[in-house]
Amino acid sequence: MSGTSEESKTVDDSMSTSGDSLETDEDDFECDGGDDLDLDEDEEPLCTLKEEDYTLPFKSLISMALESIRYFGWESDSQRKTYTWTTKTDPIVQSTDDMTCDENGQLPDAFWHDMCSSISNKGGKVANLVLNPERNTGYNGTHIWNAIYEENCLADKEMCLEERILYRLLSGLHTSTTLSIAKHYYPPSKRKNRVNWEANPSYFMEQFEEHPEYLRNLHFSYVVLLRALRKASKFLYDYDITTGNIIEDETASQLLKRLLDSTILQSCQPVFSAFDENIMFAESPMGERGILQRSFKGVFHNVSSILDCVQCQQCKLHGKMAMLGYGAALKILFMKNEESFVSLDRNEVVAFINTIAKFSEGLKEVRDLTNLYWKEVSPAPAVNEKEIDLVDTAVGLVSKLSREGRLEAKREMELVELALSKEPNFLLIVKHYHRDLDKFLQLIESLFQSENSDNPDAIIVGSGLAGFAAALNI
Image (tube, rainbow, N blue to C red):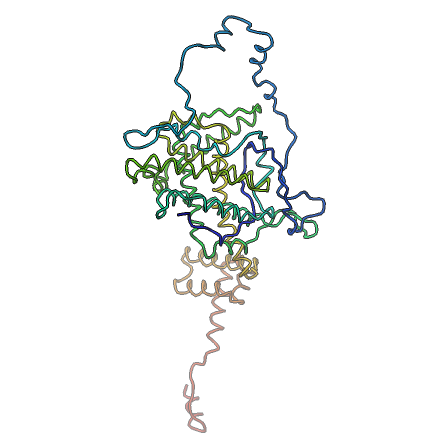
C-alpha cells in the first residue's frame, strides 16, 4: 500500500540551502517559471542556475603523475613498484544482490554503500549553492511530489514502520521546500519597488494551518539528520576538505569543527531518543529482514530517480542535494561499523551538511512566517514611544522614593497605578519635576489633596430654617 499522499499541499517550487558547492547534471531544461511573478523584462527565468567565473587551480594537476608515466614511462624502479602490484586483494563486490545476511538477519554494511547511486552525477558540473538559494521559481512540482509519495510502498499490507519513517522523511523535505518558497515568494521588481525577495505569509498559512503534522514531520526529519551527524562526528571532525582554495578549505574545516563541537550534539540526548534507527528492520521475522532492507533501498532509489523528471534546474539541484543528504544520513545510521563511513564521498558529505542547514533554516522560517502572518492579520496599534518613556520614568521615580523610605506602601501603589493608567496630571508633574524629588513629593501631595477637596464634608438634608440651623451648627 502506498504512503499517504500530501496532495492538499501544493508545492510550486524547488529546494535549497547555503554554503558549499555541489555537482549537478549538465542537462538543460526549459522553464517558464516566473511569468506570473512580476519579473522585470531583462531578468532571466527564476529556475535558471546562476554560474560564476572561477578556476580550479588543482584541476590541471589531476592525474599528472599518471599522465607523465603514460607518455614518458617509469622514472625509477621505486615509482614502478608504487604504481604496480600483483598481490591479490579482497574481491570487489559487483552487486549487492548476492550479499548474505548475518546471524541477526541483517545485511552487511557494504549493502548500504550504494544508497545514493540513483542520484546521478554523470557529466556533472559544480554549482554554487550561495548563488542558487532555494526560493519560488514559479515551477509547479505537484506531479513530482505525487509520484514520490506513490512510490513509497514497501509491502502490500498496512504501512509498516520503515514505510512510515520514509514517508515522514519525504514529508519533512516537502515541508522544508514549501517553507523556502513561502519565505522567498516574491522576487525583486523595479515595477513593484521590491529590492529583495519578500515573503508570502498567507501562502504559508494556507499550507500548514490545517496540517500541523507536516511541521512535526520537519522536526522529525531534522532529528534523524542530527542523529546521523552525531554518529559520524569523529569521522567528519578531521574530514579532508580539499578543493584547491586554501583559504576557503580552512574556513570550511573550522566551521565543520564548530558544528560538531556545538552543545546541541553534546547535551540533547532526550531529543535524539525521538528516533532510533536500531528498531528498523528488527521487528520483522528473521528471514524477512534482508528482503525488507532491499525493498527500503529500492524505494529510496526509485524516489531519487523521479527527480530526473523535474524540468526546473534550480528545483532539480536542491531536490537532488536533499535526497543525497538523506542518503548519506541513512548510510551513516544503518552501517554498524564506523570504518564503513569511508564509503561516503565528498558530494555526499557536502549534501549531508547542507541538508542539515536547510532543515535548520526551515525551522526558523516557521517562526518568522508565523509572526509575519499575524502582523498582517492584526497589526499592532501604533506605539507612542515618548509616552512609554515617560511612564517608565514615573515608575522608576516611585521605586526610588520607596527604596529611600520617602513613600508609604499605600502611596507607592497609588502612584504606580497612576503611572500605568497614564494619568495626564501625574505624568505632567513627572515630566517637569522628576529631577527635584522634594518638589515632586509636595506636588504629588497637593494633587491628592485637590482630588479629595472636591468631595463634600457633609450633606444636609432639609430646607428652610431647620436646614439653615443645622448648617450653622456644623
